[in-house]
Length: 281
Image 1 (cartoon, helix red, strand yellow):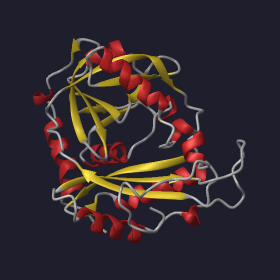
Image 2 (cartoon, one colour; image 1 turned 135 degrees about the horizontal axis):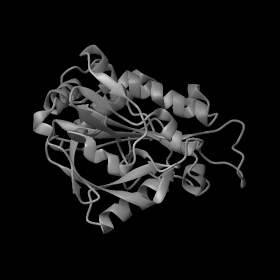
Image 3 (cartoon, one colour; image 1 turned 45 degrees about the horizontal axis):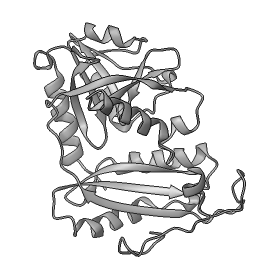
């Protein structure tokens, strides 16, 4: 925390911290394997992007090698092969009111916790949120803002229906994403995912998958689809940089596709290999 290692019961923030009071900050969640962060350069580039979107000075963020060294040290206490790393940035303390201080003194926190990957083929049940919609013009929705109330509300709603996660729609009623992941469909050799203009947070796993699809000659479609149209696909899955890929076997009570008959397994293994074996610092 702010450049020093602290025990959990000693780490604290001031009551004037804007992250606590206003949600004025952002974060990155990263996968670490045997002490090294997967896709670390891409994560740090996105951290810069978050900062730029809220006019936070990029030069106040930690350097890539600093983050890598901190995680390597913290990883020694995990005693697992895999861990989840969260790097949280608050703009720090300021005077009362919305406008941030001209020279912020940020709170920067890095935590490492044990993580158990879930097999990609273990199906998820999604239920469409009736409370939450994505807004393509939202600053908070376009970055990993520490104000996560929309996602919390949608997740609670899905849980009340007996689901594993919520399917969140765009403002015009088309499929956007889940609370923590981008969503994809497979039809034959074609890969589908919602377009950026639906208000989604475009994840690093999404970028990886689209690049893979281009390299392997798969067609890619971005056309808008309603939840009912998901039944057209041979398989539906979610993807993020922590969990990798997960099959969706049911949406709003409707069974979806047969993933075993698609290229899902090949893609899932490619992503997992990249997250665990192709880590470059």
